[in-house]
Length: 210
Image 1 (spheres, rainbow, N blue to C red):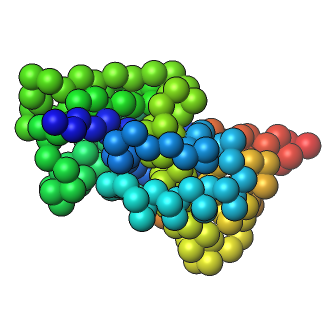
Image 2 (cartoon, rainbow, N blue to C red; image 1 turned 180 degrees about the vertical axis):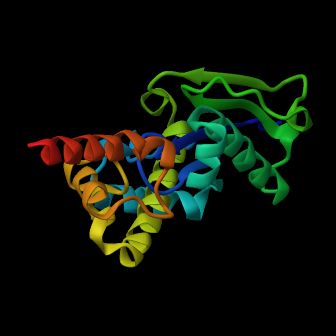
């Protein structure tokens, strides 16, 4: 009986703008690929090569929490919600039955999965820096990163003043300065940018005093 591992990882937790994106990947049994490593340690070209291999050879799914959901739930709860949704997606498409999963491997997050997935042989393990320990988690990190980067590049075309194509929504100096200049938009996380806007208001008040 063949039993699989399901790796889960996310990207975008620390971003000021755009969604949080989670991916699940189930690798073929006894698979080896030298590019299945932490997505942050790969070049863009290597990530694209690895991504193309994964979507052709593996079972995978993704799920998104938008910035409004993150503001409503907080980033931690939104991450757990999105991870569970990615699991739901991979099983809902009958890519592989729940009973054939031996391990669910997660990067850092102590996920409590829905009762629907639980069976006596299933083990849920989570690791700090999981992408360096598990190729399944590494594969999930690659799918999440490439999928989200492509999405942020499309969003950049709608909001060109913020440089999203280069920093993908993270808190770079360019991004923070753009928020101070142009205010936040519908794709920004209000709970994340409030301090940046507060700093701008305080700076303006001080300039008015002098």
